[in-house]
Image 1 (cartoon, rainbow, N blue to C red):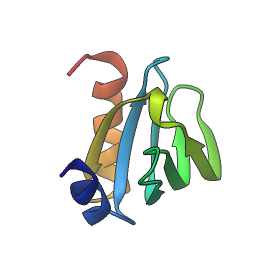
Image 2: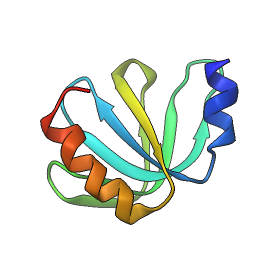
Image 3: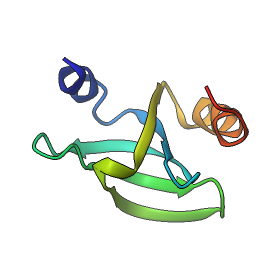
Length: 86
């Protein structure tokens, strides 16, 4: 059920919080159904300000996935995700 939900938000903006504390914002490109690896396009690491065209995030590193309608709302929400445990 979770995989179907994630596939529905393909190519929309998401925030990913990783187990090591990093927070990524980007457009969801694809999810590997076998291992749940996530690929983000137009990605930005909020912690260090790094911007990349594409990033692959391994499934075992993902702690939280949030879906947001646009990049501006994702950036605002990422500050809360960065400093708070939801």
